[in-house]
Length: 366
Image 1 (cartoon, one colour):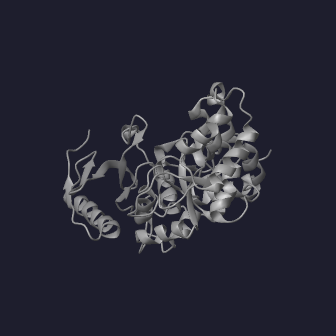
Image 2 (cartoon, helix red, strand yellow; image 1 turned 45 degrees about the horizontal axis):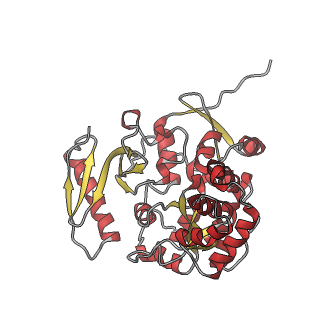
Image 3 (cartoon, rainbow, N blue to C red; image 1 turned 90 degrees about the vertical axis):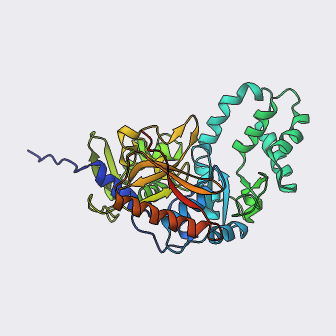
């Protein structure tokens, strides 16, 4: 009779330390900003500043000018990709990851079908491409230019249709550190100076996802990408992967040579921006978000900036014109308070070296 083998179980702390290591959050990495953006498969960029805060928490010697220069040089760009949200991606990923998630963008349009009655989406895509490649346009300008072709259509739906059918990037100065600029759009091909490449293969993307977010389940990756039906890719790769189970019995996949640190590996305090992908890229977020703190980093559809202690969500923070205010969920002891303060000083010195901020501990949130 064949002997049945059971996949090893990885507890929450084991998954936490493995994920933090892949996310460059256990120790700051010597990677360049470009290498880090590529390794992490992009940085959440719903707002302008989060990618800079994300890299300040992860990279040794990071300065905001490094990412800003990459954006100005068009080596990275901001565009709608994963989960229909804006990410900062390398130029290569702009041209390959966006085609991979295009089916999700097409499904997104179904919510606006009533406002698009009678609209020829193929023609709209051609017209919109010509408009934004003639000159970068805001969504308002794009809607106004498209409206005469379909006067009965919903203007908002026309803009959404353009965004969903075309790989539109936000042009600079939007996204540059210390600069301001409204959201103006053109196509990735036009901005980056080369054509869209064949979509990234799902198998190759599974391997990259596991390298940055693993160990992980099929559903985890589907949540990260905003896609469905990725099971086949995992099954094709199964002979090349290790399998584990979490404490709930969910099957997890991982790269054989990926780091899985000891669960007791120290995890220093880290300040993360709102919408950081660490907290958004798994179906089961308990590897970072303790059950008792579930939902505490959000209000409505807005995310707070978060504080990690011992690798887990443990507080919030905010930066105003005078002070960095830290609001832990549990009052820290003297040693931990000193560690949090040191990390706060590092963040401020990295991103705001010419400013003077007080560091304050606010009311403990319960």
